[in-house]
Image 1 (cartoon, rainbow, N blue to C red):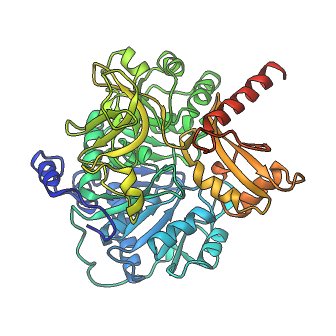
Image 2: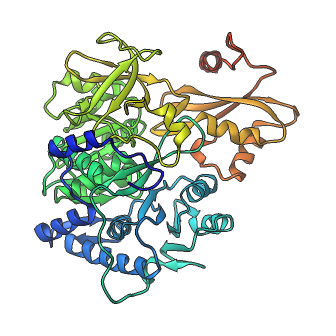
Image 3: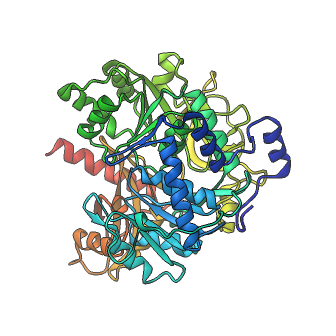
Length: 541
């Protein structure tokens, strides 16, 4: 196991191998098998590419040789920040082949987050697009590079500017180094944690490929499946549940949609005969309204997955009534555990639950504040352990002591209840975190950023309800200088390079904070405060 990563206890690892969950597969090995099985079948479609499995393999080989010639090798960390494009897969599979470790950044991340990833991992390379959604990532690379000594290579999809183009990698004769082993860490994903900057989640070839393989089976994928990737490609949901990697595992076709707007996405579904796609809840009503007005040809669409945030049963019912496709609710986390409603579940289960775990060996505990089990059907904290759930974050020993029990159960931070049928119902979050339409925001992280402003004496970030996104963020601030306005604080956070989705949607100024009995800021009362303000505004427009 990679240094600073927590290994699975050997007894559990032996059990997972004996049960056939861990089959000794690796990503390079799986890709080679699919190339042999499906050579000329279509693997990846994007705005600019239509790659067969054979063509994908050739591009992976070219990039792996080029990265190797640059000196990128086993255990080197590489921050990958690409939009939904075919080249995303060529890059990550080339890194997999070398045993290098992608760090999956999201297109929305900016200087603050990207610099943290480099400083935390000592990454040696940064893979970006030239521009996407009006933002120039080459300028961001320049800002990051100035403060990160480990960054040796910036590789650009498109016009490289001052850097090197992905189309112009060096060519090196000779063999590549040996491929990785099944138990090796394959990449790092990002947590949606509630404390500080995002934690890094190490996933191995063995554990992640089990999750992908089992997800593909549950979702009934085959070589005839066509998956539309709408959510950013590096998200765990769109990567593996079953996502793009599950589709490639099954020998199907992945369609990379660079923009989630229904006008773009629905046209892709009609044109490429998409059979399955995944959405976060805020996209659902927008898509349903667009279906009514645009009347696209959706006859090929069989499954619509929804996950990433709480999904109301009323909106779930709309999906089942307005689309001729099966709704599948998905509840999971990049740390591991994934739950699905099954495609043949009764409608009541699909509408009112978030499904049950992938694996018979996914162990679930639902406990009270004292870690004691709650009665069946009661709400409690979700703890889990299983063949694809990590036992620790990367280089986070102090945090791991709080996030995991002594016997290896992960404290998810979710409040759930378990039904008699084994399906989970998600009731909310116990961690201090805002789920803004599927994007997880650590309140503590944003609070630390605001406290850097000279006029901010104290602050607290809480979730406020929103009909579209589920939750938005509200910052309550005590200031020294009453001339400082909310817009000044927003501008300050932007200048510090914080991702746009983390910047508070609303700022309220207070003279003092409500306190708990032990003298801490009462976020419960602050949440009640903003809810009362919103309610008053809605009745007195």
